[in-house]
Image (tube, rainbow, N blue to C red; front, side):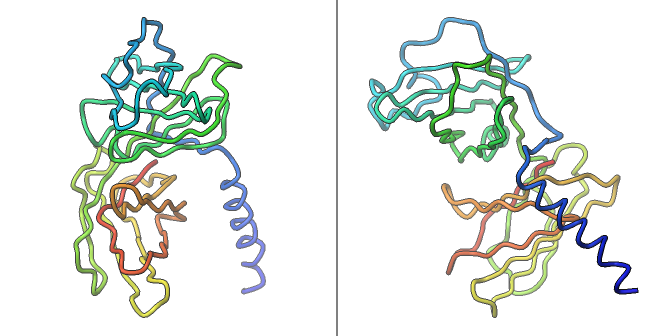
Length: 231
């Protein structure tokens, strides 16, 4: 019996490893297209914090969703040549900790709590740019104390994930600290693509769950404050 199960286990492991090297096909995405309109000469007025002198930046492109609810502005640092993205939406959970992908690239980028993401040196000149954004389908606020396994329910969830829950267990005797997350969803099974653990405003941990299960190794003396699900 044990020998019969090995080929399947190897196949599943191989498929999982291959999936890490391929572009993620998020299910719940919104497509953004090039917005053919006159752009503002002052990028700090929209989607820009102003903490760095705006003269260092040149606006490269603006993308928008068909309903104009999402706006993605991409600026280029004229000194380093790197690009910075600014995602805008009226609702915070739509632009905070949202994945951004581009049509001709396998890379994925995650915005921070301000809707910003570092894109690095990407080429925006070779093809018409089309992007997709994937906000979280469910958001869970993590309690301060995790002394035993606890079930928590979402503070936000779309229609498909309203009845979902997380069973979280923190293994304090292990070094480093290990947090186990099991996603439970009683309705039709959905394939989760990512679980993101929010540690603070800047630090996030990303996991590719297997059958709704993910293990996170936590930095010393850091307890996460939020967990986001993406499908």
